[in-house]
Amino acid sequence: MPGFLTTHVLDTSRGSPAEGLKITLYRITGQSREKIAEKITNADGRTDGPILPEDAFATGTYELVFAAGDYLRRHGIDAIEPLFLDEVPIRFGMSAQDHYHVPLLLSPYGYGTYRGS
Image (tube, rainbow, N blue to C red):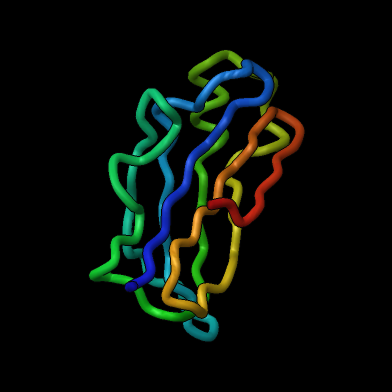
């Protein structure tokens, strides 16, 4: 089975999915970073479809960049500038032809992630 990548964002300060949050996916090669996808989360905090579908999957190092600051500002969460969190990058490797799920648990002063299912 070919691999693919999904993600979602939960706003732990509001206790709800983070709708309308921009996520950019990059492929990392050495010191270079190539943008390969950009999506906005839906009402469930997920992207409509995989952010990296099966036909684009390749083993390698990737980086998801979550536009947390824009989202937090829009929702009036911790509007004191500069925000503690603005862009949240998560760099990870994908080596198997498998489903990778990399979620973000977000609050104004911290975040967490894990490899989900």
